[in-house]
Length: 297
Length: 292
Image (cartoon, rainbow over all chains, first blue to last red; front, side, top):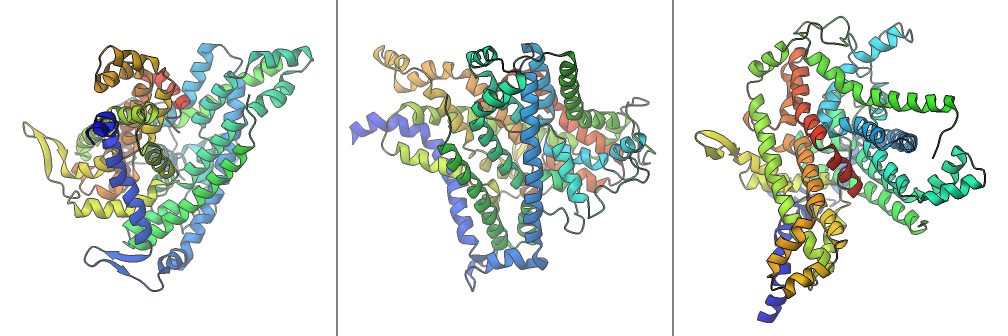
Protein backbone atom coordinates (compact mmCIF):
# COMPACT_ATOMS: atom_id res chain seq x y z
CA UNK A 1 0.00 0.00 0.00
CA UNK A 2 2.72 2.46 0.94
CA UNK A 3 4.55 1.54 -2.25
CA UNK A 4 1.40 2.33 -4.22
CA UNK A 5 1.14 5.72 -2.55
CA UNK A 6 4.80 6.45 -3.13
CA UNK A 7 4.45 5.52 -6.76
CA UNK A 8 1.11 7.08 -7.62
CA UNK A 9 0.33 9.48 -4.78
CA UNK A 10 1.57 12.52 -6.67
CA UNK A 11 -0.44 11.63 -9.75
CA UNK A 12 -3.67 11.51 -7.77
CA UNK A 13 -2.77 14.67 -5.92
CA UNK A 14 -2.17 16.44 -9.24
CA UNK A 15 -5.59 15.51 -10.61
CA UNK A 16 -7.51 15.80 -7.32
CA UNK A 17 -8.72 19.42 -7.69
CA UNK A 18 -9.82 18.85 -11.28
CA UNK A 19 -11.61 15.59 -10.49
CA UNK A 20 -13.30 17.16 -7.46
CA UNK A 21 -14.73 20.21 -9.25
CA UNK A 22 -15.52 18.12 -12.31
CA UNK A 23 -17.52 15.61 -10.26
CA UNK A 24 -19.41 18.18 -8.20
CA UNK A 25 -20.22 20.68 -10.92
CA UNK A 26 -20.33 18.66 -14.14
CA UNK A 27 -20.67 14.91 -13.67
CA UNK A 28 -23.19 14.88 -10.81
CA UNK A 29 -25.31 17.75 -12.21
CA UNK A 30 -25.55 15.98 -15.58
CA UNK A 31 -26.80 12.82 -13.89
CA UNK A 32 -29.05 14.81 -11.55
CA UNK A 33 -30.44 16.69 -14.52
CA UNK A 34 -31.33 13.43 -16.22
CA UNK A 35 -33.13 12.24 -13.07
CA UNK A 36 -34.88 15.60 -12.61
CA UNK A 37 -36.11 15.53 -16.20
CA UNK A 38 -38.25 12.52 -15.16
CA UNK A 39 -39.74 14.08 -12.03
CA UNK A 40 -41.20 17.21 -10.54
CA UNK A 41 -38.90 19.27 -8.36
CA UNK A 42 -39.94 21.95 -5.91
CA UNK A 43 -37.81 23.45 -3.16
CA UNK A 44 -40.56 22.59 -0.63
CA UNK A 45 -41.14 18.93 -1.50
CA UNK A 46 -37.96 17.98 -3.28
CA UNK A 47 -38.17 15.60 -6.23
CA UNK A 48 -41.46 13.73 -6.57
CA UNK A 49 -42.36 11.13 -9.22
CA UNK A 50 -44.74 11.98 -12.05
CA UNK A 51 -47.00 9.86 -14.24
CA UNK A 52 -46.22 8.99 -16.88
CA UNK A 53 -42.55 9.23 -16.02
CA UNK A 54 -41.79 10.91 -19.34
CA UNK A 55 -44.42 13.62 -18.78
CA UNK A 56 -41.83 16.44 -18.79
CA UNK A 57 -40.72 15.41 -22.27
CA UNK A 58 -44.30 15.63 -23.47
CA UNK A 59 -44.80 18.95 -21.69
CA UNK A 60 -41.54 20.22 -23.13
CA UNK A 61 -43.13 20.16 -26.57
CA UNK A 62 -46.73 20.99 -25.70
CA UNK A 63 -46.55 23.62 -22.94
CA UNK A 64 -47.72 27.12 -23.91
CA UNK A 65 -49.10 25.94 -27.22
CA UNK A 66 -45.96 24.13 -28.28
CA UNK A 67 -43.68 27.16 -28.37
CA UNK A 68 -40.68 24.86 -27.93
CA UNK A 69 -41.26 23.27 -31.34
CA UNK A 70 -41.19 26.74 -32.85
CA UNK A 71 -38.04 27.45 -30.83
CA UNK A 72 -36.31 24.36 -32.26
CA UNK A 73 -37.34 25.42 -35.74
CA UNK A 74 -36.02 28.95 -35.16
CA UNK A 75 -32.77 27.58 -33.79
CA UNK A 76 -32.30 25.29 -36.80
CA UNK A 77 -33.02 28.09 -39.26
CA UNK A 78 -30.59 30.34 -37.37
CA UNK A 79 -28.04 27.56 -37.38
CA UNK A 80 -28.25 26.72 -41.10
CA UNK A 81 -27.86 30.33 -42.22
CA UNK A 82 -25.17 31.42 -39.77
CA UNK A 83 -23.01 28.29 -39.96
CA UNK A 84 -23.03 28.23 -43.77
CA UNK A 85 -22.19 31.92 -44.00
CA UNK A 86 -19.60 31.85 -41.25
CA UNK A 87 -17.71 28.90 -42.74
CA UNK A 88 -17.87 30.35 -46.23
CA UNK A 89 -16.78 33.86 -45.17
CA UNK A 90 -14.05 32.43 -42.95
CA UNK A 91 -12.72 30.31 -45.79
CA UNK A 92 -12.71 33.17 -48.29
CA UNK A 93 -11.08 35.67 -45.92
CA UNK A 94 -8.42 33.20 -44.79
CA UNK A 95 -7.64 32.38 -48.42
CA UNK A 96 -7.37 36.05 -49.32
CA UNK A 97 -5.01 37.01 -46.48
CA UNK A 98 -2.81 33.96 -47.10
CA UNK A 99 -0.57 35.53 -49.79
CA UNK A 100 -0.14 38.78 -47.81
CA UNK A 101 2.96 39.60 -45.74
CA UNK A 102 3.14 38.71 -42.05
CA UNK A 103 2.26 42.18 -40.80
CA UNK A 104 -0.76 42.61 -43.04
CA UNK A 105 -1.97 39.13 -42.15
CA UNK A 106 -1.73 40.00 -38.47
CA UNK A 107 -3.50 43.30 -39.02
CA UNK A 108 -6.50 41.75 -40.75
CA UNK A 109 -6.70 38.84 -38.36
CA UNK A 110 -6.76 41.32 -35.48
CA UNK A 111 -9.44 43.45 -37.15
CA UNK A 112 -11.58 40.37 -37.62
CA UNK A 113 -10.89 39.03 -34.16
CA UNK A 114 -11.51 42.18 -32.12
CA UNK A 115 -15.33 41.96 -31.93
CA UNK A 116 -15.04 38.29 -30.88
CA UNK A 117 -13.52 39.27 -27.52
CA UNK A 118 -16.48 41.53 -26.81
CA UNK A 119 -19.28 39.97 -24.82
CA UNK A 120 -22.27 38.73 -26.78
CA UNK A 121 -24.37 40.90 -24.47
CA UNK A 122 -22.74 44.09 -25.74
CA UNK A 123 -22.91 42.86 -29.35
CA UNK A 124 -26.60 42.01 -28.99
CA UNK A 125 -27.37 45.39 -27.42
CA UNK A 126 -25.47 47.24 -30.14
CA UNK A 127 -27.45 45.45 -32.83
CA UNK A 128 -30.66 46.24 -31.01
CA UNK A 129 -29.98 49.92 -31.62
CA UNK A 130 -28.57 49.37 -35.10
CA UNK A 131 -32.03 47.95 -35.79
CA UNK A 132 -33.90 50.78 -34.02
CA UNK A 133 -36.88 51.71 -36.15
CA UNK A 134 -36.58 55.50 -35.84
CA UNK A 135 -32.90 56.34 -35.68
CA UNK A 136 -31.09 53.03 -36.11
CA UNK A 137 -28.02 52.68 -38.26
CA UNK A 138 -29.50 50.00 -40.54
CA UNK A 139 -32.48 52.06 -41.73
CA UNK A 140 -30.28 55.17 -41.97
CA UNK A 141 -27.77 53.51 -44.28
CA UNK A 142 -30.41 51.81 -46.44
CA UNK A 143 -32.34 55.09 -46.77
CA UNK A 144 -29.19 57.03 -47.71
CA UNK A 145 -28.38 54.40 -50.34
CA UNK A 146 -31.91 54.84 -51.68
CA UNK A 147 -32.75 51.17 -51.10
CA UNK A 148 -35.76 51.80 -48.87
CA UNK A 149 -38.26 54.61 -48.51
CA UNK A 150 -40.19 53.30 -45.51
CA UNK A 151 -38.27 52.40 -42.32
CA UNK A 152 -38.00 48.65 -41.73
CA UNK A 153 -39.26 47.37 -38.34
CA UNK A 154 -36.33 45.00 -38.02
CA UNK A 155 -36.93 43.57 -34.58
CA UNK A 156 -40.51 44.61 -33.83
CA UNK A 157 -42.09 42.90 -36.85
CA UNK A 158 -42.53 39.20 -35.97
CA UNK A 159 -42.28 38.24 -39.64
CA UNK A 160 -38.72 39.46 -40.02
CA UNK A 161 -37.34 39.58 -36.45
CA UNK A 162 -35.68 36.17 -36.71
CA UNK A 163 -34.24 37.19 -40.06
CA UNK A 164 -32.78 40.32 -38.44
CA UNK A 165 -31.14 38.27 -35.68
CA UNK A 166 -29.71 35.91 -38.30
CA UNK A 167 -28.48 38.81 -40.43
CA UNK A 168 -26.63 40.29 -37.47
CA UNK A 169 -24.87 36.97 -36.91
CA UNK A 170 -24.08 36.56 -40.60
CA UNK A 171 -22.49 40.01 -40.63
CA UNK A 172 -20.20 39.05 -37.76
CA UNK A 173 -16.84 38.02 -39.18
CA UNK A 174 -16.17 34.44 -37.98
CA UNK A 175 -12.89 35.13 -36.22
CA UNK A 176 -12.06 31.59 -35.13
CA UNK A 177 -12.69 30.26 -38.63
CA UNK A 178 -10.37 32.86 -40.17
CA UNK A 179 -7.58 32.06 -37.70
CA UNK A 180 -7.91 28.27 -37.93
CA UNK A 181 -8.32 28.19 -41.71
CA UNK A 182 -5.33 30.41 -42.15
CA UNK A 183 -3.25 28.25 -39.77
CA UNK A 184 -4.26 25.13 -41.72
CA UNK A 185 -3.44 26.78 -45.05
CA UNK A 186 -0.09 27.95 -43.73
CA UNK A 187 0.78 24.34 -42.86
CA UNK A 188 0.34 23.05 -46.41
CA UNK A 189 3.81 22.28 -47.88
CA UNK A 190 4.88 24.86 -50.49
CA UNK A 191 6.10 22.08 -52.80
CA UNK A 192 2.52 21.10 -53.58
CA UNK A 193 1.84 24.53 -55.03
CA UNK A 194 5.17 24.64 -56.84
CA UNK A 195 4.47 21.31 -58.48
CA UNK A 196 1.04 22.53 -59.54
CA UNK A 197 2.55 25.73 -60.95
CA UNK A 198 4.92 23.66 -63.08
CA UNK A 199 1.83 21.96 -64.46
CA UNK A 200 0.48 25.39 -65.31
CA UNK A 201 -2.25 25.67 -62.65
CA UNK A 202 -3.56 29.17 -61.87
CA UNK A 203 -4.44 30.46 -58.37
CA UNK A 204 -8.06 29.31 -58.49
CA UNK A 205 -7.15 25.80 -59.72
CA UNK A 206 -4.51 25.51 -56.99
CA UNK A 207 -6.99 26.65 -54.37
CA UNK A 208 -9.64 24.22 -55.54
CA UNK A 209 -7.38 21.20 -56.10
CA UNK A 210 -4.80 21.58 -53.32
CA UNK A 211 -5.95 23.97 -50.58
CA UNK A 212 -9.57 22.82 -50.24
CA UNK A 213 -8.94 19.05 -50.01
CA UNK A 214 -6.13 19.56 -47.50
CA UNK A 215 -8.14 21.68 -45.07
CA UNK A 216 -11.05 19.25 -44.98
CA UNK A 217 -10.54 18.15 -41.38
CA UNK A 218 -10.31 21.71 -40.05
CA UNK A 219 -13.43 22.57 -42.04
CA UNK A 220 -15.34 19.73 -40.41
CA UNK A 221 -14.08 20.76 -36.99
CA UNK A 222 -15.24 24.33 -37.58
CA UNK A 223 -18.62 23.23 -38.89
CA UNK A 224 -19.20 21.28 -35.69
CA UNK A 225 -17.88 24.09 -33.48
CA UNK A 226 -20.10 26.69 -35.13
CA UNK A 227 -23.11 24.38 -35.27
CA UNK A 228 -22.90 23.65 -31.55
CA UNK A 229 -22.46 27.35 -30.76
CA UNK A 230 -25.45 28.23 -32.93
CA UNK A 231 -27.62 25.59 -31.26
CA UNK A 232 -26.81 27.29 -27.96
CA UNK A 233 -27.63 30.82 -29.14
CA UNK A 234 -29.02 32.88 -26.27
CA UNK A 235 -27.28 36.17 -25.42
CA UNK A 236 -27.65 37.66 -28.88
CA UNK A 237 -31.41 37.09 -28.89
CA UNK A 238 -31.99 37.83 -25.22
CA UNK A 239 -30.31 41.25 -25.38
CA UNK A 240 -31.45 42.20 -28.88
CA UNK A 241 -35.13 41.38 -28.29
CA UNK A 242 -35.49 41.03 -24.50
CA UNK A 243 -39.20 40.34 -24.33
CA UNK A 244 -39.50 38.57 -27.66
CA UNK A 245 -41.89 39.33 -30.53
CA UNK A 246 -44.79 36.89 -30.65
CA UNK A 247 -42.40 33.94 -30.03
CA UNK A 248 -40.79 34.66 -33.41
CA UNK A 249 -37.32 34.73 -31.93
CA UNK A 250 -37.58 32.06 -29.22
CA UNK A 251 -34.65 29.65 -29.36
CA UNK A 252 -33.97 26.40 -27.51
CA UNK A 253 -31.94 28.08 -24.78
CA UNK A 254 -34.30 31.03 -24.34
CA UNK A 255 -36.99 28.40 -23.75
CA UNK A 256 -34.84 26.48 -21.25
CA UNK A 257 -34.27 29.77 -19.43
CA UNK A 258 -37.95 30.68 -19.62
CA UNK A 259 -39.21 27.29 -18.39
CA UNK A 260 -36.57 26.85 -15.71
CA UNK A 261 -35.99 30.27 -14.30
CA UNK A 262 -39.06 32.33 -15.15
CA UNK A 263 -41.81 29.68 -14.89
CA UNK A 264 -39.85 27.45 -12.46
CA UNK A 265 -40.80 24.24 -14.25
CA UNK A 266 -37.44 22.66 -13.45
CA UNK A 267 -38.30 19.23 -14.84
CA UNK A 268 -39.49 20.62 -18.16
CA UNK A 269 -36.41 22.84 -18.45
CA UNK A 270 -34.17 19.83 -17.80
CA UNK A 271 -36.05 17.82 -20.43
CA UNK A 272 -35.62 20.61 -22.97
CA UNK A 273 -31.92 20.84 -22.17
CA UNK A 274 -31.59 17.13 -22.92
CA UNK A 275 -33.30 17.63 -26.26
CA UNK A 276 -30.56 20.19 -26.98
CA UNK A 277 -27.98 17.66 -25.86
CA UNK A 278 -29.34 15.02 -28.25
CA UNK A 279 -29.20 17.49 -31.12
CA UNK A 280 -25.59 18.39 -30.33
CA UNK A 281 -24.62 14.75 -29.85
CA UNK A 282 -26.01 13.80 -33.26
CA UNK A 283 -24.00 16.58 -34.92
CA UNK A 284 -20.87 15.30 -33.18
CA UNK A 285 -21.56 11.71 -34.26
CA UNK A 286 -21.93 12.82 -37.85
CA UNK A 287 -18.59 14.60 -37.57
CA UNK A 288 -16.79 11.53 -36.22
CA UNK A 289 -18.27 9.46 -39.04
CA UNK A 290 -16.96 11.83 -41.69
CA UNK A 291 -13.59 12.22 -39.98
CA UNK A 292 -12.97 8.49 -40.19
CA UNK A 293 -12.66 8.73 -43.95
CA UNK A 294 -10.36 11.71 -43.73
CA UNK A 295 -7.33 12.48 -45.88
CA UNK A 296 -4.09 13.08 -44.00
CA UNK A 297 -0.98 14.65 -45.47
CA UNK B 1 -4.35 31.30 -53.77
CA UNK B 2 -0.61 31.53 -53.55
CA UNK B 3 -0.21 34.53 -55.82
CA UNK B 4 -2.78 36.77 -57.40
CA UNK B 5 -1.61 38.10 -60.69
CA UNK B 6 -3.77 40.62 -62.51
CA UNK B 7 -4.23 44.11 -61.00
CA UNK B 8 -8.01 43.71 -61.16
CA UNK B 9 -7.84 40.58 -59.04
CA UNK B 10 -5.60 42.38 -56.60
CA UNK B 11 -8.02 45.28 -56.24
CA UNK B 12 -10.92 42.89 -55.68
CA UNK B 13 -8.96 41.04 -52.99
CA UNK B 14 -8.13 44.27 -51.17
CA UNK B 15 -11.68 45.56 -51.43
CA UNK B 16 -13.05 42.33 -49.96
CA UNK B 17 -10.57 42.31 -47.08
CA UNK B 18 -11.13 45.97 -46.22
CA UNK B 19 -14.91 45.70 -46.54
CA UNK B 20 -14.87 42.70 -44.19
CA UNK B 21 -12.73 44.65 -41.71
CA UNK B 22 -15.20 47.56 -41.86
CA UNK B 23 -18.20 45.29 -41.34
CA UNK B 24 -16.36 43.61 -38.49
CA UNK B 25 -15.41 46.78 -36.66
CA UNK B 26 -18.20 49.20 -37.51
CA UNK B 27 -20.81 48.09 -34.93
CA UNK B 28 -18.19 48.47 -32.19
CA UNK B 29 -17.14 51.86 -33.55
CA UNK B 30 -20.72 53.06 -33.68
CA UNK B 31 -21.35 51.91 -30.12
CA UNK B 32 -18.52 54.16 -28.95
CA UNK B 33 -19.70 57.06 -31.11
CA UNK B 34 -23.16 56.89 -29.55
CA UNK B 35 -21.67 56.52 -26.08
CA UNK B 36 -19.62 59.69 -26.56
CA UNK B 37 -22.40 61.79 -28.10
CA UNK B 38 -24.69 63.55 -25.61
CA UNK B 39 -27.96 62.02 -26.83
CA UNK B 40 -29.71 61.97 -23.49
CA UNK B 41 -33.29 60.92 -23.26
CA UNK B 42 -34.46 62.46 -26.53
CA UNK B 43 -33.92 59.96 -29.35
CA UNK B 44 -31.84 61.49 -32.12
CA UNK B 45 -33.49 61.99 -35.49
CA UNK B 46 -30.72 60.05 -37.15
CA UNK B 47 -27.68 58.09 -35.94
CA UNK B 48 -24.40 59.89 -35.40
CA UNK B 49 -21.39 58.63 -37.31
CA UNK B 50 -18.88 60.71 -35.34
CA UNK B 51 -19.44 62.04 -31.80
CA UNK B 52 -20.77 65.54 -32.33
CA UNK B 53 -20.10 67.22 -30.02
CA UNK B 54 -17.69 64.88 -28.25
CA UNK B 55 -18.80 64.57 -24.64
CA UNK B 56 -18.43 62.35 -21.61
CA UNK B 57 -21.84 63.38 -20.27
CA UNK B 58 -23.42 59.96 -20.94
CA UNK B 59 -20.71 58.31 -18.88
CA UNK B 60 -21.17 60.81 -16.06
CA UNK B 61 -24.90 60.22 -16.08
CA UNK B 62 -24.34 56.45 -16.19
CA UNK B 63 -22.15 56.52 -13.10
CA UNK B 64 -24.74 58.60 -11.25
CA UNK B 65 -27.83 56.77 -12.53
CA UNK B 66 -26.50 53.20 -12.34
CA UNK B 67 -24.75 53.68 -9.03
CA UNK B 68 -23.59 50.04 -8.83
CA UNK B 69 -21.75 50.16 -12.16
CA UNK B 70 -18.31 50.29 -10.54
CA UNK B 71 -19.38 47.47 -8.25
CA UNK B 72 -20.32 45.30 -11.27
CA UNK B 73 -16.90 45.91 -12.79
CA UNK B 74 -15.18 44.90 -9.54
CA UNK B 75 -17.33 41.77 -9.28
CA UNK B 76 -16.49 40.82 -12.86
CA UNK B 77 -12.78 41.35 -12.28
CA UNK B 78 -12.67 39.43 -8.99
CA UNK B 79 -14.69 36.50 -10.35
CA UNK B 80 -12.68 36.28 -13.58
CA UNK B 81 -9.35 36.48 -11.71
CA UNK B 82 -10.24 33.82 -9.11
CA UNK B 83 -11.53 31.36 -11.71
CA UNK B 84 -8.60 32.03 -14.04
CA UNK B 85 -6.03 31.57 -11.27
CA UNK B 86 -7.59 28.25 -10.36
CA UNK B 87 -7.49 27.00 -13.94
CA UNK B 88 -3.94 28.08 -14.68
CA UNK B 89 -2.69 26.20 -11.61
CA UNK B 90 -4.83 23.10 -11.45
CA UNK B 91 -5.44 22.50 -15.14
CA UNK B 92 -1.69 22.52 -15.64
CA UNK B 93 -1.22 20.02 -12.82
CA UNK B 94 -3.88 17.62 -14.02
CA UNK B 95 -2.92 18.16 -17.66
CA UNK B 96 0.61 17.10 -16.71
CA UNK B 97 -0.61 14.02 -14.82
CA UNK B 98 -2.85 12.94 -17.70
CA UNK B 99 -0.14 13.59 -20.29
CA UNK B 100 2.99 12.18 -18.69
CA UNK B 101 2.28 10.08 -15.63
CA UNK B 102 1.07 6.50 -15.61
CA UNK B 103 -1.35 5.61 -12.84
CA UNK B 104 -4.27 3.21 -12.42
CA UNK B 105 -7.54 4.72 -13.64
CA UNK B 106 -5.88 7.38 -15.77
CA UNK B 107 -7.63 6.45 -19.01
CA UNK B 108 -10.99 5.90 -17.36
CA UNK B 109 -10.91 9.26 -15.61
CA UNK B 110 -9.70 11.11 -18.67
CA UNK B 111 -12.29 9.36 -20.82
CA UNK B 112 -14.98 10.40 -18.38
CA UNK B 113 -13.92 14.04 -18.60
CA UNK B 114 -13.66 13.76 -22.38
CA UNK B 115 -17.15 12.35 -22.68
CA UNK B 116 -18.73 15.35 -20.94
CA UNK B 117 -17.09 17.84 -23.29
CA UNK B 118 -19.93 17.43 -25.75
CA UNK B 119 -22.65 18.01 -23.16
CA UNK B 120 -23.98 21.55 -23.48
CA UNK B 121 -23.59 23.61 -20.29
CA UNK B 122 -27.35 24.28 -20.33
CA UNK B 123 -27.92 20.68 -19.22
CA UNK B 124 -26.40 21.34 -15.81
CA UNK B 125 -28.25 24.63 -15.18
CA UNK B 126 -31.17 23.25 -13.17
CA UNK B 127 -29.35 20.90 -10.75
CA UNK B 128 -26.51 23.38 -10.26
CA UNK B 129 -29.08 26.04 -9.44
CA UNK B 130 -30.77 23.74 -6.91
CA UNK B 131 -27.43 22.95 -5.26
CA UNK B 132 -26.22 26.56 -5.09
CA UNK B 133 -29.56 27.60 -3.62
CA UNK B 134 -29.52 24.75 -1.07
CA UNK B 135 -25.97 25.74 -0.09
CA UNK B 136 -27.22 29.25 0.62
CA UNK B 137 -25.10 30.81 -2.12
CA UNK B 138 -27.93 32.97 -3.36
CA UNK B 139 -27.60 35.08 -0.19
CA UNK B 140 -25.87 38.37 -0.75
CA UNK B 141 -23.98 38.85 2.53
CA UNK B 142 -20.36 39.95 2.17
CA UNK B 143 -17.82 37.15 2.39
CA UNK B 144 -14.45 38.88 2.21
CA UNK B 145 -14.07 42.55 3.01
CA UNK B 146 -10.85 44.54 3.18
CA UNK B 147 -11.04 47.65 5.33
CA UNK B 148 -14.82 47.86 4.95
CA UNK B 149 -14.58 47.33 1.20
CA UNK B 150 -16.47 44.26 -0.01
CA UNK B 151 -14.21 42.20 -2.23
CA UNK B 152 -16.40 39.14 -2.53
CA UNK B 153 -19.97 38.36 -1.56
CA UNK B 154 -21.41 34.95 -0.83
CA UNK B 155 -23.43 35.30 -4.00
CA UNK B 156 -20.22 35.61 -6.06
CA UNK B 157 -19.40 32.05 -5.00
CA UNK B 158 -22.48 30.87 -6.89
CA UNK B 159 -20.70 32.04 -10.05
CA UNK B 160 -17.13 31.15 -9.05
CA UNK B 161 -17.60 27.55 -7.86
CA UNK B 162 -19.25 26.15 -11.03
CA UNK B 163 -16.71 28.16 -13.03
CA UNK B 164 -13.88 26.11 -11.49
CA UNK B 165 -15.23 23.00 -13.18
CA UNK B 166 -14.63 23.95 -16.82
CA UNK B 167 -12.55 21.12 -18.27
CA UNK B 168 -11.33 22.68 -21.47
CA UNK B 169 -8.06 23.81 -19.92
CA UNK B 170 -7.28 20.25 -18.88
CA UNK B 171 -7.38 19.17 -22.53
CA UNK B 172 -5.39 22.13 -23.69
CA UNK B 173 -2.63 21.54 -21.13
CA UNK B 174 -2.57 17.78 -21.66
CA UNK B 175 -2.29 18.28 -25.41
CA UNK B 176 0.54 20.75 -24.96
CA UNK B 177 2.49 18.82 -22.33
CA UNK B 178 2.34 15.63 -24.42
CA UNK B 179 4.56 17.34 -26.97
CA UNK B 180 7.32 18.03 -24.38
CA UNK B 181 10.20 15.53 -24.37
CA UNK B 182 10.16 13.14 -21.38
CA UNK B 183 13.97 13.06 -21.17
CA UNK B 184 13.95 16.34 -19.27
CA UNK B 185 11.83 14.90 -16.48
CA UNK B 186 13.95 11.76 -16.29
CA UNK B 187 17.11 13.82 -16.07
CA UNK B 188 15.62 15.92 -13.26
CA UNK B 189 14.66 12.77 -11.34
CA UNK B 190 18.19 11.41 -11.67
CA UNK B 191 19.46 14.74 -10.33
CA UNK B 192 17.35 14.08 -7.24
CA UNK B 193 14.35 16.31 -7.86
CA UNK B 194 11.18 15.34 -5.99
CA UNK B 195 8.07 14.64 -8.04
CA UNK B 196 6.70 18.08 -7.24
CA UNK B 197 9.99 19.70 -8.21
CA UNK B 198 9.91 17.88 -11.54
CA UNK B 199 6.56 19.54 -12.12
CA UNK B 200 7.42 23.00 -10.80
CA UNK B 201 11.02 23.28 -12.08
CA UNK B 202 10.90 21.37 -15.34
CA UNK B 203 7.34 21.20 -16.68
CA UNK B 204 5.96 24.52 -15.51
CA UNK B 205 8.56 26.78 -17.17
CA UNK B 206 8.05 24.98 -20.48
CA UNK B 207 4.30 25.49 -20.30
CA UNK B 208 4.35 29.29 -20.29
CA UNK B 209 2.93 29.75 -23.82
CA UNK B 210 0.06 27.34 -23.17
CA UNK B 211 -0.59 28.83 -19.74
CA UNK B 212 -0.71 32.30 -21.28
CA UNK B 213 -3.29 31.14 -23.82
CA UNK B 214 -5.29 29.32 -21.17
CA UNK B 215 -5.39 32.24 -18.75
CA UNK B 216 -6.44 34.68 -21.45
CA UNK B 217 -9.11 32.26 -22.62
CA UNK B 218 -10.37 31.70 -19.12
CA UNK B 219 -10.42 35.39 -18.25
CA UNK B 220 -12.33 36.44 -21.38
CA UNK B 221 -14.77 33.57 -21.02
CA UNK B 222 -15.61 34.37 -17.43
CA UNK B 223 -15.72 38.09 -18.03
CA UNK B 224 -18.24 37.59 -20.83
CA UNK B 225 -20.24 34.84 -19.12
CA UNK B 226 -23.93 35.75 -18.97
CA UNK B 227 -26.62 33.07 -18.66
CA UNK B 228 -25.45 31.49 -15.40
CA UNK B 229 -24.74 34.79 -13.59
CA UNK B 230 -28.12 36.04 -14.83
CA UNK B 231 -29.78 33.09 -13.10
CA UNK B 232 -27.99 33.18 -9.75
CA UNK B 233 -27.20 36.85 -9.13
CA UNK B 234 -30.17 38.46 -7.44
CA UNK B 235 -29.21 41.88 -6.13
CA UNK B 236 -27.78 44.68 -8.19
CA UNK B 237 -24.78 44.99 -5.87
CA UNK B 238 -23.70 41.44 -6.76
CA UNK B 239 -24.18 41.67 -10.54
CA UNK B 240 -21.35 41.15 -12.95
CA UNK B 241 -20.92 43.68 -15.76
CA UNK B 242 -22.74 41.60 -18.37
CA UNK B 243 -25.77 41.08 -16.15
CA UNK B 244 -25.80 44.71 -15.00
CA UNK B 245 -25.38 46.16 -18.46
CA UNK B 246 -28.10 43.94 -19.95
CA UNK B 247 -30.34 45.18 -17.15
CA UNK B 248 -29.76 48.82 -18.12
CA UNK B 249 -32.08 48.27 -21.08
CA UNK B 250 -34.97 47.60 -18.75
CA UNK B 251 -34.07 50.21 -16.16
CA UNK B 252 -33.38 53.14 -18.49
CA UNK B 253 -35.61 52.01 -21.36
CA UNK B 254 -35.32 55.13 -23.52
CA UNK B 255 -32.34 56.83 -21.92
CA UNK B 256 -30.15 55.63 -24.74
CA UNK B 257 -27.19 57.73 -23.67
CA UNK B 258 -26.83 55.78 -20.42
CA UNK B 259 -27.36 52.43 -22.14
CA UNK B 260 -24.76 53.12 -24.83
CA UNK B 261 -22.27 54.38 -22.26
CA UNK B 262 -22.82 51.29 -20.11
CA UNK B 263 -22.34 48.88 -23.01
CA UNK B 264 -19.29 50.71 -24.39
CA UNK B 265 -17.56 50.92 -21.00
CA UNK B 266 -18.18 47.20 -20.48
CA UNK B 267 -16.61 46.36 -23.84
CA UNK B 268 -13.57 48.60 -23.34
CA UNK B 269 -11.48 46.45 -20.95
CA UNK B 270 -11.65 43.40 -23.24
CA UNK B 271 -10.73 45.52 -26.26
CA UNK B 272 -7.69 46.94 -24.45
CA UNK B 273 -6.84 43.47 -23.17
CA UNK B 274 -6.98 42.13 -26.72
CA UNK B 275 -4.84 44.91 -28.17
CA UNK B 276 -2.22 44.26 -25.47
CA UNK B 277 -2.09 40.47 -25.80
CA UNK B 278 -3.14 40.06 -29.43
CA UNK B 279 -0.40 37.55 -30.22
CA UNK B 280 -1.46 35.25 -27.37
CA UNK B 281 -5.10 35.47 -28.38
CA UNK B 282 -4.41 34.31 -31.93
CA UNK B 283 -1.99 31.68 -30.60
CA UNK B 284 -4.70 30.55 -28.18
CA UNK B 285 -7.20 30.09 -31.00
CA UNK B 286 -4.63 27.99 -32.88
CA UNK B 287 -4.15 25.82 -29.81
CA UNK B 288 -7.89 25.36 -29.76
CA UNK B 289 -8.57 27.34 -26.62
CA UNK B 290 -10.79 30.14 -27.82
CA UNK B 291 -13.94 30.36 -29.80
CA UNK B 292 -15.74 33.35 -31.20
